[in-house]
Amino acid sequence: MQSHLSSLKDKKIELISSSEKETVSIGEGLSRLLKPGDIVALVGDLGSGKTYFTKGIAMGFGISPDIVTSPSFTLVNEYEGKIKLFHIDAYRLEKEDFLLTGLDEYFYEDGITVMEWADKWPELLPEDTIWVEFEILDENKRKITIRGLRDDNNRKAF
Ligand SMILES: Nc1ncnc2c1ncn2[C@@H]1O[C@H](COP(=O)(O)OP(=O)(O)OP(=O)(O)O)[C@@H](O)[C@H]1O
Ligand SMILES: [Mg+2]
Image 1 (cartoon, helix red, strand yellow):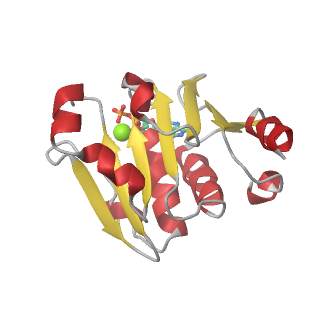
Image 2 (cartoon, protein in one colour):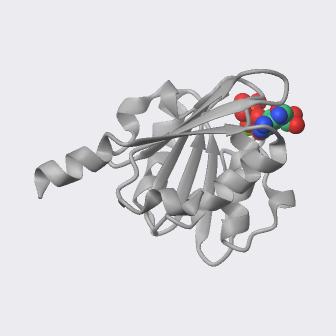
């Protein structure tokens, strides 16, 4: 069983998005695989599509994508849909503040947590975190790599 799980862990899905709309759809596709308690860690440069992807995840849970914006003035945005969605952006956060305000406790909530700039402190993230990497290929093209999915039916979502 253990070896089965670890082989699934090594699986990665690589997708090319050619527009922000496509990135939203890919996020929506991922939402279908998520379960309460899951953590989705987003990694990629400024403007690579992390927030658009989060809009897609939100849509998958019946949350309007319009209310999904990077939480710059609050530490965390909480959206109420079929499930609670917590949206954290670590870009301007200091690790001490993150820990002092107890933001890591969201990782153990029953909702789903999406964290932009999650590679700032990867050591704070649980081992079963789903990692999504965004690479800017050109003005409108992004390569999106998803790692850490547990289901072996994962390709059906995309
Ligand atoms: N294929 C694409 N997918 C997503 N965004 C795209 C794509 N092509 C162009 N864009 C543009 O790139 C920008 C992505 O913005 P977004 O806020 O999602 O980035 P981000 O990774 O969250 O950045 P930040 O680190 O500043 O929060 C938008 O201006 C969007 O219109
Ligand atoms: Mg963003």
